[in-house]
Amino acid sequence: MSFPVILQLPSSYKMTPDQFFEFCQVNRDYRIEHNKFGEISIMSPTGGKTGNRGGNIFGQLWVWSQNDGTGLTFDSSTGFILSTGAERSPDASWMTLERWNSFDDEQQKP
Image 1 (cartoon, rainbow, N blue to C red):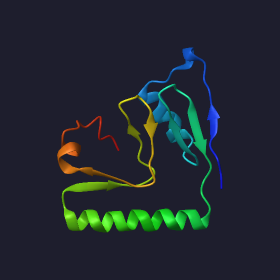
Image 2: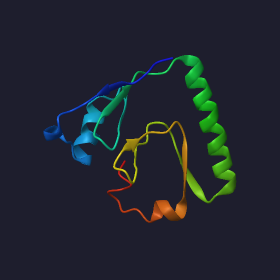
Image 3: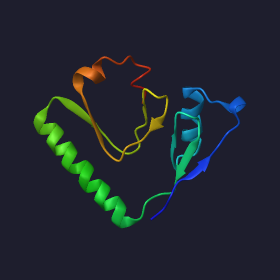
């Protein structure tokens, strides 16, 4: 089991959402999140058993979503900005089409 490394940045180093996205892109080998205080969590890759369990969970969610037809699924690489300002990447997630379609192109960025 691995635990995240928590980095605390000086308040003068506050990243904009675009800067945080770029930081994550140049560090693609890590799973990076930040909380509402701006602390950055860096997780190492999972092992095979954990990855397999996560894959099974996502697979079941995806099949359910396809059959249900009212939403979209997202994998563990997707970051979501919460109302607190934190950005998290859940192992698997689902969102209604109505909510997804309410976002502009910038919010749906690739």
